[in-house]
Image 1 (cartoon, one colour):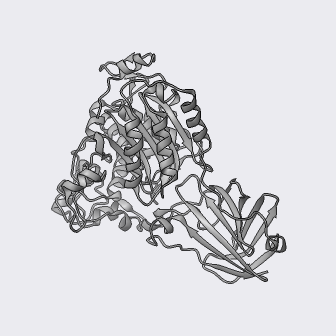
Image 2 (cartoon, rainbow, N blue to C red):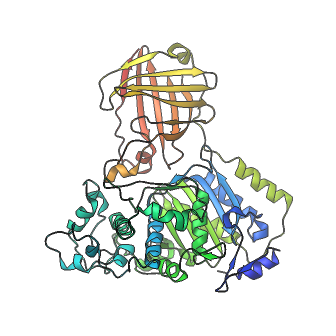
Image 3 (cartoon, rainbow, N blue to C red):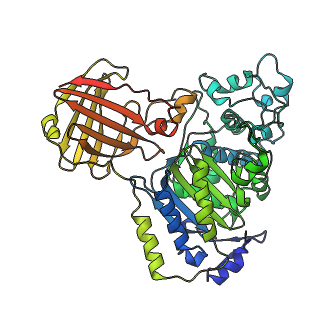
Length: 530
């Protein structure tokens, strides 16, 4: 792969640079500054090829930002997703937790060699094992805490997650074995809060989020008010791209250091090797094809092509490519995260060239048109049905069910439909477009679907979720809706079947589909009569 000198490249492209103290260069506004792909040495055709490959694949993209030499050269959101809504990052949250640890180290609040139990003397078990006694902050950072499996599914069913974590057996010598462990990342969040007196998100606001001009930022907490650390962070895609740019620039932002260069280097370089655990698998062969066997750093994965990344379930990525001076931020919904990365390597990577490219009006306009037209398909079918006129605004009383739902109704009006569900606690609506996405919010029980349901009950009151919904008549008696919760990677397919005066409403969340049944739908089939 080519290695670039940013100053030389930008001078060739006619872009002014500013010298930094350590010889690096910095652009004025980073992700807020834009350039055409060709001016930054990126082939528009390569980006279009990537978009076409995604469209023809099983991967569902929600957003994309490509940064080159500190400039935003391409961005797009697949409707109903949009730029202003923060996205659930799942385990990509871990890289932000690692950053908070680095800032706390720089502030003299802790060292990576500090022992974990020393932060929590009141929550440590009566008998501290040798391995627990040896566990250090750096072992939490490198997923080598010593447990034989992820601790999150165990600790998140308790009120005191720290105490539950420290009470678990530590089967291996810390530092000896890589085991992906979201509970270990939660402990990093708890340690930061312990030494700073602030929640992780509050500690990051003035030191990271405000300088990056982050918009709305949300982070889930445990029952004791500690940010979950290993998951639960929601930010916008442009903030995610800026976060990657910060690491690409060795912690420098707008001519000033936000993170120590030494920490960035330490946090993103190889620390421990992931084992080949599948029967018959060969590590040497896996290293040729798998981006999950390139080594792990401080809550960052190493990548092929000498890059590194933060990533989260269902395809949330912040990919940093130092040799190509590029950052790629992606949010998506896919069951094959490696497959989506393969499309990045196959199409986007070859499009990153070592000098500015000639610009043609046709290539530039075609790319912009393609980016502007990105959308997820609405349900196929008819906008009208004789049944629709017959059941319009009629209330269907439901049989007893575990959801506590009492009645449902559909109200059709032109190219819109409102789905109404009433429970013992209130009425909940979803506005649905016919042949188009309709925008709204809902607090309907069971929405939005979340994988966190597998690792403990939700904490705190349910907040209204953003939802873009569309529907169609699949046949004269079947109305199907898709509710896309565009602050998450997920959606619901909701099918209403009418038979005379009867109705049957069936819910199916997208996690169930992507997991092959590993995350079963918990909502019952609702049955009722008008």
